[in-house]
Amino acid sequence: MKTLLSKSQVENLLPQKAPFAMVDGLVELNREAFSTLTIAEDNLLVNKNHFSEAGLLEFMAQSIAVSSAFMRESKKEAKVGFIGAIKKTEILALPKVATQIFGKVEKKCEAIGIQLAKVEVFNSSQELLAWAEIKTVLSSS
Image 1 (cartoon, rainbow, N blue to C red):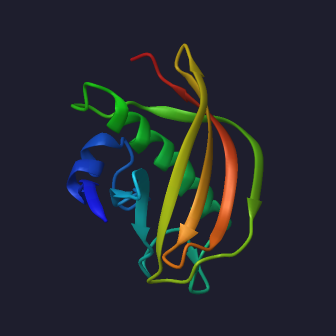
Image 2 (cartoon, rainbow, N blue to C red):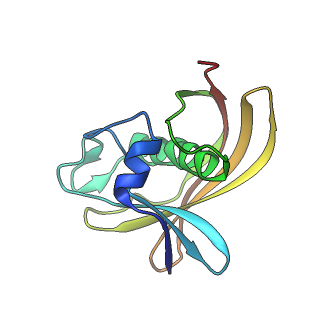
């Protein structure tokens, strides 16, 4: 596993800051980039020792933001984005506290600041935990 972006680099790219930053790294596995998050007990989106559905969706949306920023030539500032729509989603399992999860972003299309991507979330055993097709919109400022 090769680190592409450290936690501090991700923090500089995301407009979300602690305690609402839900991505703590970007790594390369088998020539594919994956966002990462190790779920802390004090994470705002943990409920009854599990990362919530809302947490998984926020992780997916922030994974799109980090992946997009990593691909941009200018990675100096965070771009504010919004979830425009969640087209489809399926939550198969809620990961427990202390689990490291991985997000794989597959960009389907992008035009005029609007992007449609499929995001899959896995645990370290490569079990699929959730997936969604999410449309995001980048602000023009």
